[in-house]
Image (tube, rainbow, N blue to C red; front, top):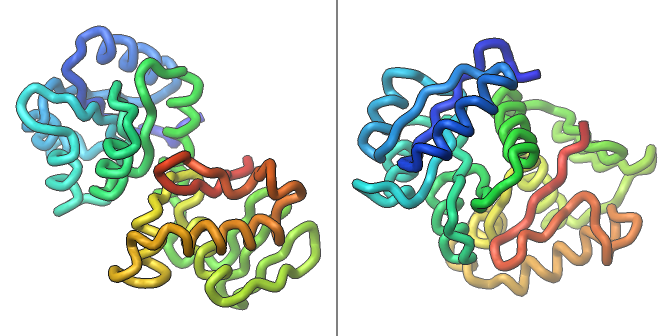
Length: 230
């Protein structure tokens, strides 16, 4: 069940989508507000104070990426993109602008609800949580320990920092550029071969079958996602 009174703002100009989402979200216990344009969405965010925003990129008055950028000037409210745009560049632009996740239309309501729950859980956590647990994988941030099935896993400093960054964003898509900037700095944000090497090394250490990963999932052409385990 969602947190009591969790508020969802849907910014989309398609009446059918708005109606469907309102019925489904309210049926799952959420409080829903709607906006049919970018400017209306910005105003509603200030008035309604949503716990999460579902945003379409193709709005009649401004591009959704511009809406994300304006929102990120003053709020960290989770934003899930819901769009017909499925090109990798569109996903990367939205995620780099500050979106938390991206779902392509047509979509499964079950998948959207699952992504929504992950985003709400993530924002509810404190930023300094010392121990992060994902199934049989545990990270103790204070001790810089990584435990898998009760056994400590030895990681290099770079491997640890990559896993920590993904863990702190667990359930969310992290783009190649975001990871490269965070670990190596802005001068390396196009050096994706670094990531392929280190992600490969990490998978060999934490995955039962590195060729079929269950923790670090590739979002093709976009980045990676550390899967959460309920």
